[in-house]
Image (cartoon, rainbow, N blue to C red; front, side, top):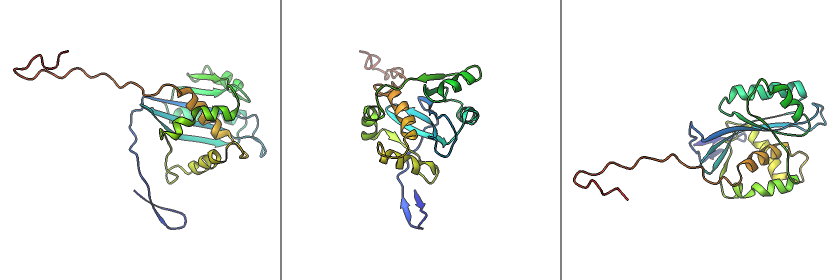
Length: 199
């Protein structure tokens, strides 16, 4: 497809058709303590899985306090009802958010990060390098530009909240490889050759 950019140039973009049915959809959240101008961001992503491919379908990134974080998680759940699993880093406001929502939302799972941020990123780098991680085009998801910029600057950038939600999600999927496709029944025998398909 052709996309007109801000400088009025035309860019040809390779489009990948998304399936309506992913093998799994889930949320990944990296939370913060406060909503001050100097605070870290809250970053929550929705991921879709199809075989070995991982799609970042949506993301919320904003400085939020505790009440606003609870509201954001509820809103993302309404928007993406199939993303039942919700990974929440067990730091900052994570435990308090889980406690506040555990009787309202299903699938809230605390995640204790293992190792440092760089080690967690290195652990999922193969999924990215092999071309199995997909992002929406900035023309339809403007937040992607900030996401790419933060990933490109990691680990020396000012912020890493989007990287943290991504590595938390992809580390959950590490080692799954290709999710099995449903088995199909054997084809019917050809007339006059009833045993041709039997082992």
